[in-house]
Length: 48
Image (cartoon, rainbow, N blue to C red; front, side):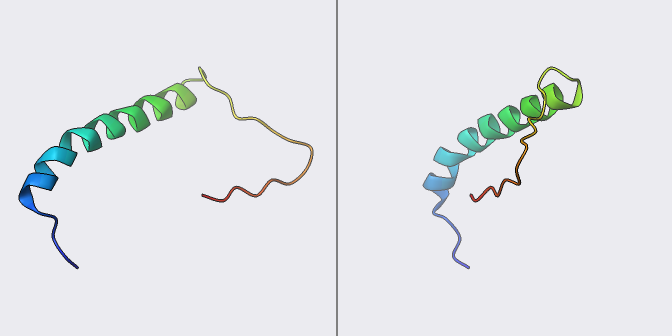
């Protein structure tokens, strides 16, 4: 597997931190009941 160029890695690293913080926040909100799961009367397939 090819390693990304160092300058691209330096450019993208802060974005990965921001994304990670967003995921942590989303998980916190679900875990503490601020966001609720939705239930549908029919089976749902999620692709993506």
